[in-house]
Amino acid sequence: MKNGKKLSQLSLMDEKSYSGRIVTHYGNQLEVEVLNGPLEGTTQRCHQRSNMTTLVTGDLVTWKPDSTNTGIVMSQADRCNVFGRYDSEGRFKPLASNLDCVLVVIAATPKAYLNLVDRYLVAIRKLELDAFILLNKVDLIDANKDQSLQRMMQIYSDLGYPILKVSAKSRLGFEALEKQLTGLTTVLVGQSGVGKSSLINQLGSYELAKVGNLSKNKYKGTHTTTTSRLYHLENFDLIDSPGIREFGLTKVTKQEVLNGFPEIQSLASNCKFRNCSHRNEPSCAIREGLNSGAIFQERLDSYQNILGTLD
Image (cartoon, rainbow, N blue to C red; front, side):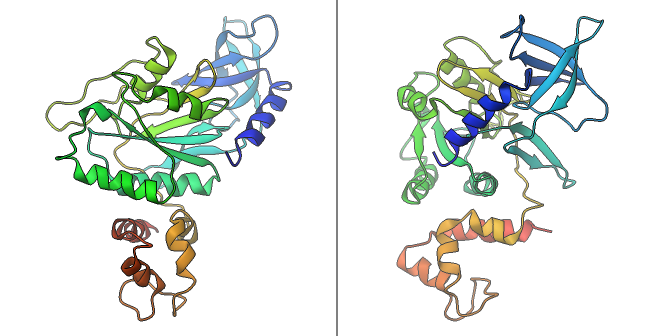
């Protein structure tokens, strides 16, 4: 891990000064894990002071009891990082904070989209976190029918992204998954219906999260997770996040998008023209990379698609 040890040590240091950690929230109320004192290890329903910024799962806070059997969050520690997405109006919606890595979950159903995974990878690279790609429901994969999925997995494997393949139904591949996550705080992200809640249930060996069925008509998942939630498992922490249809990158820069495509970034500076669009210009190192096999056409298409959505 590039940053995992550093972030985990910082969290442990902050826990000595802060008395709670946000587990999840319910409307105006927060569920706070008590980190010290006689109630250590329990959770407390709290409100936050009105002058505070919006708190998210993973935030370290100080809180105090009030007179109504609830508590009040008084202050918040500085975040190591915060992962989130932008809505259709361009507003940032934080999902989780103080992370070591991000696990991008895809599945045999619903259909996986390379461009969606790439959008996650751009955001993860911007945070300087490590990314893992997890293929769930491998028991449902038909090699003859799922060639686009196989192609996608081969592309990411060739690019050096760690690939994990599991089945939440049969626990296939879970030993390798647990080993990969040991000692880390990881957020699970992905489309609705890819099985994030089922993964957590299996990793926890009992039903921790409500599981929804796939919609039969379009094989799109039901939104069973409506807010992020932290789960303490035996050797690591997992944060489940709401499933999404799209993942916007409206506030990232062109350079940050390029950083998220390292194989393109490594060749872009060799183009003859500084403002090369990598489409039809002569002496384009990216087009040459396509011909040599150093760059995949699918990734270049995805890169240009993301650039086209920026403000």
